[in-house]
Length: 269
Ligand SMILES: [Zn+2]
Image (cartoon, rainbow, N blue to C red):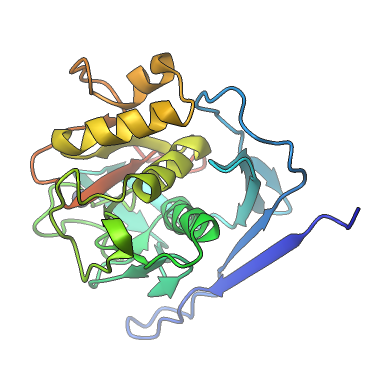
């Protein structure tokens, strides 16, 4: 047997000079590898992988939607302060303009190291599973230093991000586009969501209720149990405290809220 294939991906954070801040040298480093082909899912529950700290870096490994194990390491120097609707961001990380599976639009790419890492990771996994995919559009995260960001109420503490949808037939979208359920690429959109769920680092995702049934049915067809899906989707029962939940204005993008990083003591939900 050949040695385990190991793929390294390195995207260096953009250098920022405009605000008089020193260049941001934090690398974003992901290693994706498939240690064995037998890692296919048998129990599609939501895992809660532990974040390990070693050599000043955080590490997490989890099983991807395709049965591969994905590992990622990052250095956490950012700090999310306060609550998303009234907070700030210290030493935020900048989402690079482009990366595997995504492109960022707009002028607000700042987030916690964790948010920026996991947004890229989910796009990376989609790209890994669908190498020919058009990039998903990622919009506002937070401002440098966080704080109020029009027209949002939240997006203030580096833990919120708007992520576009995937359209059927690999149709490229220039920005956020309202999609009907039949226009939505359910498979890719679910991979993006499912990857975030599998990291255990997402509090919730806003998405219009009309788009939830197709994703629910697809996930169920993939082997997710109804008990697990009851925690993820409001559909079909109309529960409120699910991870994916309806908020008006989210038929053209996902609003992702990440959990407070463990080492950010002033972060509040
Ligand atoms: Zn948003």
